[in-house]
Length: 504
Ligand SMILES: *Cc1c(COP(=O)(O)O)cnc(C)c1O
Image (cartoon, rainbow, N blue to C red):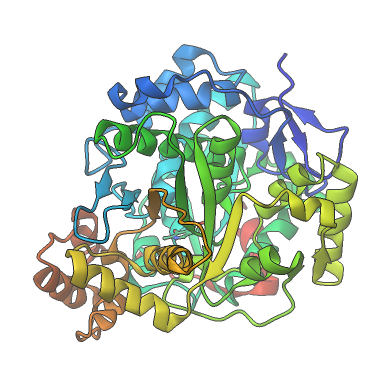
């Protein structure tokens, strides 16, 4: 048996890839991390000729050591098919306009729910299906998920009507966009449950983590034939598929002759739970020539503060912004990075995470800080975000959503320092991950452009289409007439009861 994953909080825990995917999170609350980061045997010069699916196979295979080739191919082919509105799956938009030639946008929003979460959640149900077979699991799986807006719908779409699976999604009732909420409450599938929580995303995510850690509930459900798993980015089955598109994007830059083979590029990533950018970090570790990993936060700038001071402090109020999927103070996946820079010390990692729970903060050692040099952290205010949407559109005609705009702003601020005398020009090409379709946040995008953002989804998306001369995605049009199926709302302390009620 391949022993491939360890817990960030307990050195004794060792599981295979398929077990890690089934379980989601380790029993003592740690996250699963690859024991060694595999050295990917990919010749960069091959990348331009490879399809998304081929890149996916080559990148994911070493991370999923107990999946056979045919099993992995089956998952990939079922995931990256015509559910995506674009044959390329993740097209790279290289802007040619004056002054913008160094930046390209990696569009990760052509999946069923119009945000990058589809990239991993399209394949996770299939990876789990294989894992169930492999481990001869007899119980039904209950996917328990907290969402800041996009994970919820992408997980619902992925797991709806999958036999042997039930899915329960909790979202902050007043913390998601109109489209995001509508997408979730209209979800079909007899195995789906959607609940609005009176609280913010951190409350919701903490509530879900507490249910995972509640041994009594787990026992009770096991007797009824259920086990929990997670579709959040704490599941390595989410993280591994996200490494793929950094390789794919690099291949597209090569194919377009924008870079030479081996040339280092920067990436700028709008960040919340630290999943997407952690995937870039893994890509870099496995040999992809990435230089700076630019971590862009919105006004909830815990990560910026962490990168600049070495102290992670969540003792502050959560701000609701126009980039709700990043309204997060507890960035779950940072735990994996902490584990790696602590020299893979589960003891150290557990100590810091306990401190985060109990004292709401932790400070890393100077030695650990030195290992963060790959990252550049910064943030965009609400005004910066709106200005970036307008500025990019006015200069290039390219429309970006508020999350992507956070990264666009931070990227430009990062580059601008190099014009100053005495500062060497970074000079590198940059890939900005375009995390969601602007149509998902039509009202705010319209306001940023100086237009009227009021009205229902149908009105605002039509207006955005007229102004930007871009078509309304089919996934949005389908939404405006779909009946609402989920009406449940609960308090934070009722979340456990919701779960047991659904599973009666
Ligand atoms: C989830 C999400 C993010 C944040 O990504 P993380 O992996 O949580 O850091 C940013 N933008 C959008 C649109 C998202 O859906």
